[in-house]
Image 1: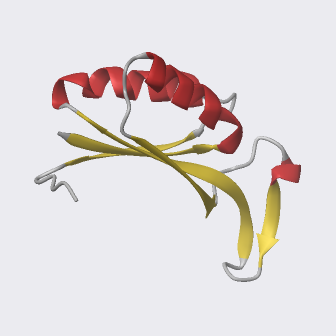
Image 2: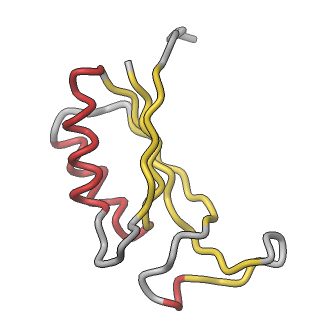
Length: 102
């Protein structure tokens, strides 16, 4: 199993989630976070006195999937999270060593 963490622009999150769910992925979490991605429009940023920088609300998407479905999940995220900017976000992949039901 793999865990994917993707930091993407908030306005692309709906398309990413719909494409993943449409392909059968179900273990998806979406969290609003403050980040320093370059905003598509300047009005999407605000100055944070806490961080001492301009930030914007972006989305951290977490997805757990089988290793054989990893390439498909990454493709869907990249295709649907893309903006017209050079950097539309970041994606990290980590192995999952253990899953425990609670």
